[in-house]
Image (tube, rainbow over all chains, first blue to last red; front, side):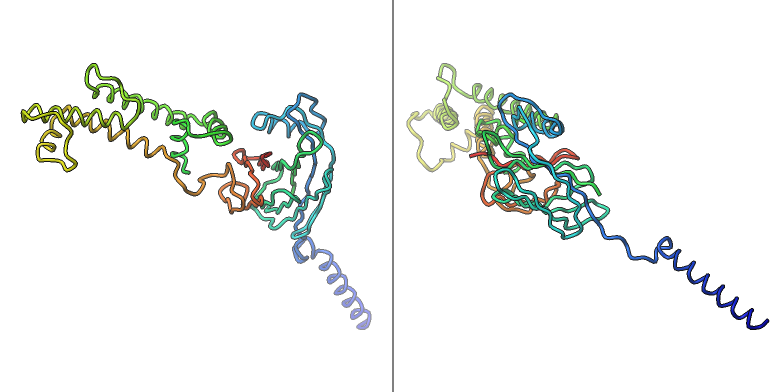
Length: 153
Length: 176
């Protein structure tokens, strides 16, 4: 009888411990998940010549047409990146130049992202989710290449 | 160049190309800036009115500021000479006691005040070197805090930064 009681106590203890372990993630005992940021990158070709505004280019066109005399816009390439802190993502432009992005900080004020365009500007940008970053780059094929970046995190 | 200096340079027609376009864009979006420009216009008109009033009757309107000053001083000379009964010949370089007496006369005071005001406006309109107060045309490499662009390096290439909307930031290489 005593042996049976002892075995039952151990089993109960084991069950309790296993149950507690299974609760650990929800109790916050697990490590904080790594911060990541999703970036929607696009390279578009814009021109001051009259032309079409292609699908996926409407927001860019709406934002810059008045100030920068853009009459046509076509998306040339799209790429989605998911980057952790200090992780570098890259995208190649049609002119062979490379765009690199690196999240530096992700906090409650937004994200600080380093953007480096080969042969073009290098910038650190503080952005919020959905903030559209537009970088007008080099001239190419009669127009101008424009890189857009929209983060979500 | 500070915001006020840039506005005055625009009013004086001293801004060209990209700087002028940038100022016109700011004026379109800022009623307070447009009000400041109107104040400048009103002040300039007032100064021109005073200069016209200070000029002698029948005398041709001076083409420039120094012409206006010369006209005012000549009028003061004539007044002093008339009071002292002396000649109207060119004044000596060092002012005599009579010069200061003449300054107390209302017409002379008004002429000098108008000339000084016009001179002040001309001097303030001159481009003044200074740090950019906001990110519009960014220097080659700079920490440009205040907006969403916290650092920008263009290796000397001219660039335009539009960072006034909450959800859009534009960095635009200006084609040479």
